[in-house]
Amino acid sequence: MTGQVFHPGHHELHGVTVVLETHGLTTYLGRFDTQDESGVHLLDVGVHQATPEGQSKEEYIRRSARFGIRPEHKRVVVPLAEVASIMRLADIEPQEAGL
Amino acid sequence: MPYNPTLVAPMRQEMTRLGAKELTTVADVDAALGDQKGTMLVFVNSVCGCAAGNARPALRLALEHSVKPQQVVTVFAGQDLDATTRARQYFTDYQPSSPAMALMRDGEVVHFVHRHQIEGRSPQSIAANLTGAFDRFCAATV
Image (cartoon, each protein chain N blue to C red):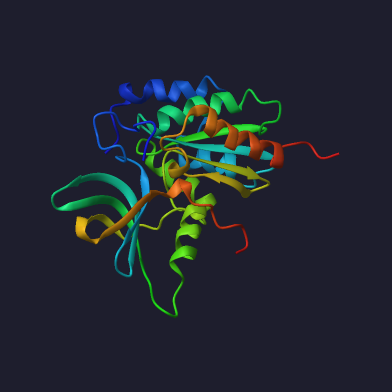
């Protein structure tokens, strides 16, 4: 990712609300704090577990983009080996009203 | 625990200079938002230097637009705790974040700007988001 560093002196994503997709069934939404050898540290984290009958990951993310993240954990550390992708939540098109 | 009032005073003044009315108590919030008529922007202020540091100038730019809300009010998250909690009860569909902005019309939230839509964005970009909503929801109907 390029562009403005939000909090100078920190990781470029520090303080930014992100969507962290894993190689598994879990997706995390939260504020990026830092990254170290233990993994990616997220704050105020919402979690989506993909299940055949549940809300889709895409719907969960788009709904969160519109209404905000309902935090389930104050802090989560995601091991680097589990991280598939990280993107800004602000880059997600929000769910339209009424959907 | 709230920050030192002296530290946050400039952040409050930045809002009041824009004409925003500070709501510091539950009673203030209820007086402003209870039975709210017309258009009103609720600005949830924050000490976060980077996000709020862009959000406040964004609001200043947006309020230079020809179309704008009839009233602007502000609560200070992390400072005026009860007032902020109360204000958020008027937009419970939206998860709390700060800074944030809720544009209300006749008691309904018609547009919401979350913190994640402010982070890392320029004041001009945030202002464009706001003025688009002002044009859509605050323009006088003929």
